[in-house]
Amino acid sequence: MSSTSNASGSAGNQRNSDPENPLLLPSRKGFSARDEIARVFFRGGSSFDAWLTACTAQVAQVLLTLPYSFAQMGMVPGILFQLVYGLLGCWSCYMTTSLYADYVRILDRQNSRRDDHIIQWYEVLGGLLGKGWKMAGLASNCILLLCTATIQLIACGSTVWYINDSFEKRTWTYIFGAGCFLTVFVPTARNYRLWAFVGIFMTTYTAWFMTISAVIHGKVSVQSSSSSLPSSVIDLQVENVEHSGAKSSVQYFTGGTNILYAFGGHAVTLEIMDAMHKPRSFKIVYLCAVLYIFTLTIPSAASVYWRFGDAMLHNPNALAVFPRTRFRDAAVVLMLAHQFIEFGVLALPIFVMWEKLLGVHHSKKHYIVKSLSRIPIVLVIWFIAIMIPFFGPINSVVGALLASVAVYILPCVAFMYARQAPESRKGALEQPPCWLLRSWVPMYCINLGSVLWVAIVGVGFGGWASVSNLMEKISSFGFFARCYQCNSTRH
Image 1 (cartoon, rainbow, N blue to C red):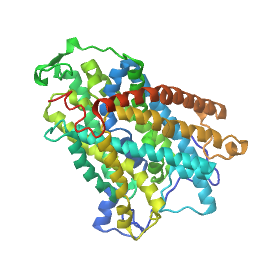
Image 2 (spheres, one colour):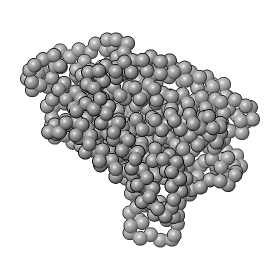
Image 3 (cartoon, rainbow, N blue to C red):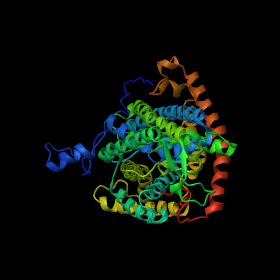
Image 4 (cartoon, rainbow, N blue to C red):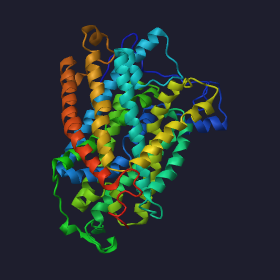
């Protein structure tokens, strides 16, 4: 994914710090101790910072649901779908980066770019393609991010229950929802430097705990939904594990859309990219992030499914099948902290959209006003998480109906539309890379293939399967379920 530069080629490739925002790097000479601490831990704009944030935003609770998807699909399809959607997500990121660079160049030529303004995807679409595209980007990204942040909160209530079941999952969701109000005080993606570093460490530990524990444990206690015996006396021997794979089309495509949802950046690409000092390098940063994520998701999902087999069909949260040990409890606590951090990263773009709607986004002297204006967003997410607490099935629905369009289809279609004129292709900052022979034809072919695959397999079959599965859960448990699947697995 290479790029060419011309006289204006620096457009979209350099960001300045905001001297008036106290949480960004100040412009005056010399630093106080407070400034130095803030610079090291909370003011990140490098490629490494972007890599940390991309990894943190990409994988957290979804790591716990991938063994469930493997049980729905089978081992080989599960691995192949991860590879396919990971690479499609990288390609979509490349398309987004290309359009972002052109948009920033327009702003620079018009001298209308502001350092205190966070550029978002819908603004790029509106600036390059018109109002209709802007509204499509705004609606798809806003709804996707709202649902994804909701899933993080649902995951918090679901995960903590496995180390303390004295409260129901809904009660835990109340508690963690209250804690999520703290995220309104984080201004931009740059200020997640320390938290992103901690977050990726936490998920790495959890992934390798799952992998190693699945390999070395000889048996696990689970509760059969059809048995009246307590879970402590029902043992699943390794020798008797069954790996049936997909038992129905609904299962197969539901699992596939959950994997689709796991990749693609969750629609926070622009916010992370715009926080970088050199945004155009994000396409390489994201590729490196996905390659690292593969080392977490593939071994953990494959090993857990190999060890526990079809038992995962009844456990969307993989931590449910592991015996309670101090190592598992550590994984639960670390994953909870990461989910909390990821909630903030995913909610940030919604906060910014809301600030722009209210007209307070550029307020430099009223930081508290901006922070307080974000509170209604957290309230809405909190309410939805309590109403639809179906951890696992809801991931697939969001993947099929929202992530597929916002993350995979829209960037590819927008790129093809923006590059339809020869003049646009000639003047684009991002020219076709050398591995595509510097030709636009293979780029269009890859875009078209990506759109068709995601539209048919993801939106079409995946949408049908995931919605059918979710409706079954709603019929069984109802809205505002007090403790979803609490009786299917206990420790």
